[in-house]
Image 1 (tube, helix red, strand yellow):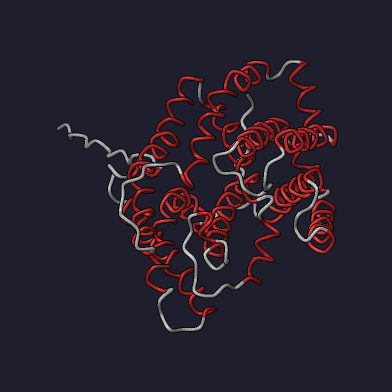
Image 2 (tube, helix red, strand yellow):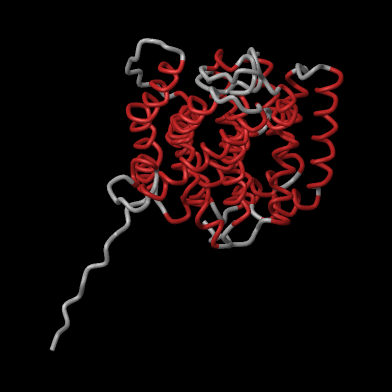
Length: 359
């Protein structure tokens, strides 16, 4: 496959999506229904915070699935299928399994202690379900992806690239997203964890992300050109969802809105974020460990702050600070301890062998 330019915009989008995920989860703890999702609940809610969260909750997870599929398309340009499975096993499956047995039980301990429950060891995927899904998608779709790699440069490959670099490619992905929600009919569109809706929505977005990068310049030029149109339509559909349907719109409209937001993010990202920086390099490395750790520190911050006799708005700010500071402080430790790095999705740092000087 042809060598593509480094896409810093995709790196930035991944970092921003992880940051939004943290803010989203923090905001859940300030909603009256938080315990239903096994989140801690503040003494009083800040329900107004849920309005901006309602904007992102229909596309934040689909966006991450698209980005993950795009990452695989870049990865297979320098790997065969054995190397890809090995690399994804180390960087996705290992952190997933480690997180299930060592990280998630910690956050559950804190939750149980806060609600005066009997402390028990409960290994489970919880927020790490996303990693499990991604690894399954890699295994399932690798034959297709490597066939496409093998066909690169042929007439059929050119037709596929032109198709997914055109509006027809967007329409086929949208059709699949609409079919998914109409067939699965989830209880809530925005609840993706450990259910068939999240699984099938995820595999469609993962596959589509791969195909969009495979399409090359045709796709990027298209979304760059129409980014503002996608954004305007996404905003319009959110306003319809909010004012007409009180956030419970028909699923086909929600699927359309979700896809428009995703396209707008990619289009605007390609316009304005496709540049490297030291900040991006640092945050790209930190994003994975921070994602794995954030629920532990969110629960710890909530348990320490929710009992304080201070304004609820200040509590929110302190929970945000406590979660981010805890995650990044721990990341600073993880990245310096080589044997910990693979457990949190980071590559081992290879020590350069010292060469003996020859007289």
